[in-house]
Image (cartoon, rainbow, N blue to C red; front, top):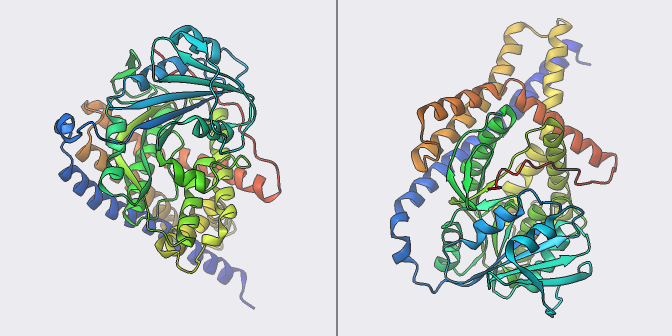
Length: 468
């Protein structure tokens, strides 16, 4: 039987190989994203948008589920009403808010109750009233009993008049051209059933009239680290997966879907806290099973600005919920895992998310723990421990800096040199404490799921970053 030193060495080699595999996968995504981003930037001429779009693009319903969003709901809706798009409507779904969300909407937009009937294609909690704006002909508000975000979105889909719908969080804000950019895949490829846009953080930014005036960095360090996270997640993560038609996540804050395809798949599930990811994974599964050609894609330039948590407790609740939603989405669609005819999404993306995203926190924490314990017990020399932590932390830095480089060479949102220096510093510093803390939050969410504790949304405090 192997002695303790041999077992520790085997464990170290296993965890080293694990870290190399997960970061190797991320580096592959960086490679794919770099080529896709270069191709995208070379084919899109943003200055010609008024000429490229001929007012014949399909009409869109923008759905805004809102629960206790009084701090930001008016600014968010005003930004949506200023979208440059030929034909669209905004449907706000007040999901039984206990604060002044509905009152803010009534006051700001001159809402009047209207006895509107609509076809109930997806079951939802009862609708109490439907309001129309006397100031904006394309604005309606649905007031319903509380049923959760998924239930609110289903109610909005029932009320949607147009073939495409775009889900936008109530604490978010779109740039005027975002919807025109996001609809582009639906115009060029009829197989497209869903498209996600980039999400960036509005903390610290200057907002006026429901429109972002200037991108600035927040003073709060937690929000600053999250800016780097979001760049990493969207600029190489989702862009890389989209290149393989294996994208499993479209953010609930900003995604455009073909309504009939979503209704045919059953709409949003109300028994998960990760309804946005679960819907996308289910679309892959149902369309693969039906052998229908389709595309689920992502564009890096249509931007949605949202608010990041600035309190540690709020950040913890968010990441625990995300981890729970990830696990539920994968388990509810486990038939996609290496299934016959599932292609890259079933044989590469799904296993990657299972082993490196869902169970990743467990392996990371155990790997760190075993390494430190073995060194403390004298079973591991300093050079081996240093190699392990250098690989784990060094590759993390490389990924963050690569994302910042992709941002700088493409969109250049943060124009001041000191802003770039601050983001570069954050890309390095986050690897010494912050990322490990996020891993612990994710591990907590994973353990709650393992022991069967029911998932809850938790309280998400808002400072009103998109408020005027």
